[in-house]
Image 1 (cartoon, rainbow, N blue to C red):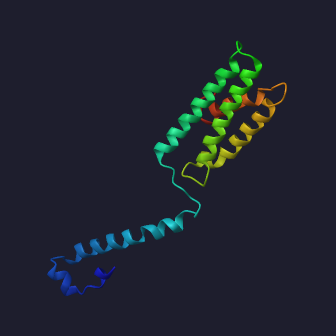
Image 2: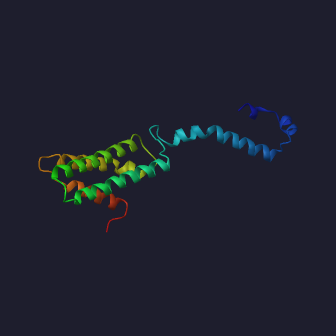
Image 3: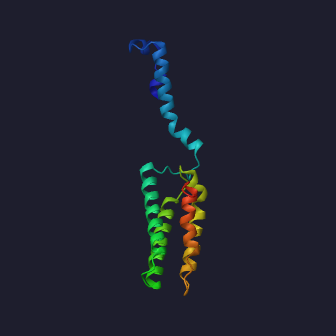
Length: 153
């Protein structure tokens, strides 16, 4: 910021007329204040999730939900095998969501509904872990993804 304190004669020696000097000073001030402005406009817990990471995590969630749907529809495996495969998918979904939700993010739907999704995953797990598994909440979980993303009927 010492450059701002240069006298008018110095600016003239540098060949910077008044409009160009004003532009230069404005850019310097804005550049120097960018961090301060960001700290005032976002809460300290805010973490920007890069678009690539968000998309890859969402694709991972979509893949797990799709695979879980297939597991739920499978009739040619034992109940114990089906139960373990669906529980494994639920674990993967939960881990991906927890990884995405460590702090506030730039994705409002994730911030707003992420905990609801995690609650649904945990409820599904509890009902599937019973001696007689109940897959009702797991099927609702995949339907919720489709509804939220506008894929429902």
